[in-house]
Image 1 (cartoon, rainbow, N blue to C red):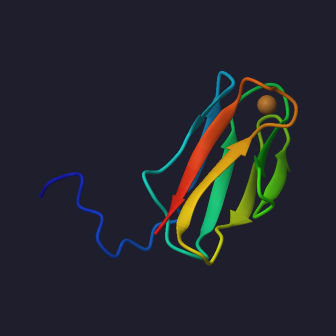
Image 2 (tube, rainbow, N blue to C red):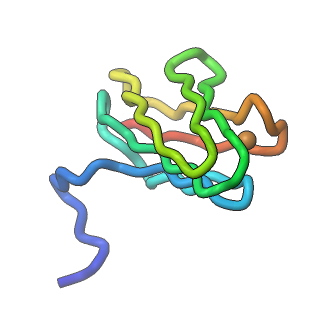
Length: 91
Ligand SMILES: [Cu+2]
């Protein structure tokens, strides 16, 4: 079975943060709960530029956001570190 098979998967999508960078799933379903894991020793945020979601994740902790219900491409940043940015694709 190919390891990339993902249709209808019920697994919770995860955004992981390590070394001041986001690792984001290729896409998530509208309204999906997304776990965010911060593997760094500093707090980070996942903050949507258009206000769809905003959460702070303490060092070594995890948090959860809910993906927007509207399909689209959502850019997000870390409000603490201006060089951190990512994109969440909802479809
Ligand atoms: Cu940060």
